[in-house]
Image (cartoon, rainbow, N blue to C red):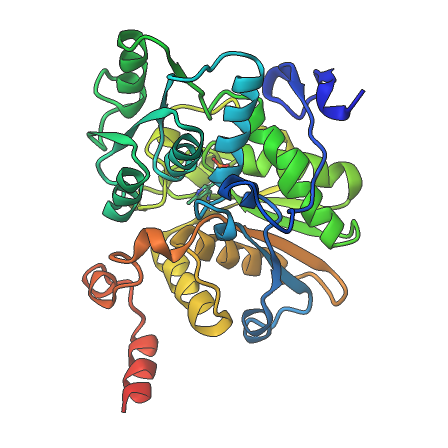
Length: 364
Ligand code: PMP
C-alpha cells in the first residue's frame, strides 16, 4: 500500500485530524500541466547580504515565488483541492469559495482554471490591485470587503464567503485556516525539500506566519530530523501570533499583517514549535526586499524582506558552519505599484536617504 493511501492522525495536522501523507516527487521533464510546477523550488545562498551584515553562518532562502502561481500558497491550494477531489467532496461543475488576503486565492484560481472549476474569492479592500488583476485574469470572481471589518462581522471577507456558500448550490469552502492539508503540504513538501537539499543539517529556520501553515508544517518536520534546530517565527506588528504577548502590544500600522490574523487565532498555527518570535514592520522589510532584488537578484515580495531581516537579526550569534534557512513567500509581481515604486516608498517615509543618495550617484 502506498504511503498516500494510508490515513494518519499524527500531529502534523491541527487537532490530529485524519489526513494522508504524500511522498516527494521530482518534477517530470515534460509537465502534464502547469500545476506540476508547484513545489521543488530552489534554495539559494544569500551571499552579499550575509557578508554585508557580518554573518558568520550560511544564509539560505527557499524561493517560493518560483511556484506556478507565484507564491508559497500554490502548494496548499493545490493540495487541499486535490484531497477534496479524492474524498469526493468536489465534483465537476462545483464552485470553490475562499476568503483570502490574496495568494491563496491566486493559488486556488490557478488550480481551478486548469481543472475547470468556478472560483469565487472574497478579499479585503486593502489588498493590492496587482493581486486582484491576476485573480481576474485567472477567471476568478472577486468580492472585496471592508478592510476594517472584524473577522466575525457580517461584512468581513470570512462572513461573506460563508454566506455565499449557503446561497450557492454545489459550492465548497476549502478553508485554509482549518484544513489539515495546509500544514501537511509543507510537512510533506517544503520541509522535505529543504532537508534533502541540506543533507538534514538545518541549524535555524526563520519563517513568517499568516495562517501559520508554512511555519508549523516546516518546523515540525525539520525538528523531527534536526532536534537542535532553532525555530524563529516572524509576525508583522498588528498581528497577534507572537509570544510572549507583550511583543504584540506595538500599535504602528503594518501593511503586511493579515486582516484575518489580527482578530482570530488560526488552528493551523502550532506555537509550541516556535522557540523565538520576531516582530517585523514595513520599513526594514521593504528596505531588505529592495536589497534582495538589487544585491542578490532575487525578485521577491515585501514579506520576504521581513523574513530575511528577521533571519539576519536571529542569526547574528551563529558561528561558521551553521546554516540558517528562511523562506520567501511571494514575488515582486504583487507589489509593482507598492514597495518597488520610489514615490510610494517616499510618501510613507520608507526610502532611506542613504539609498536615495546611492541611486543618485548611480544615475550620474
Ligand atoms: N504569503 C505571504 C505573502 C506571506 O507573507 C506569508 C507569511 N509571511 C505567507 C504567505 C505564509 O502564510 P501562512 O502562515 O498562511 O502559511
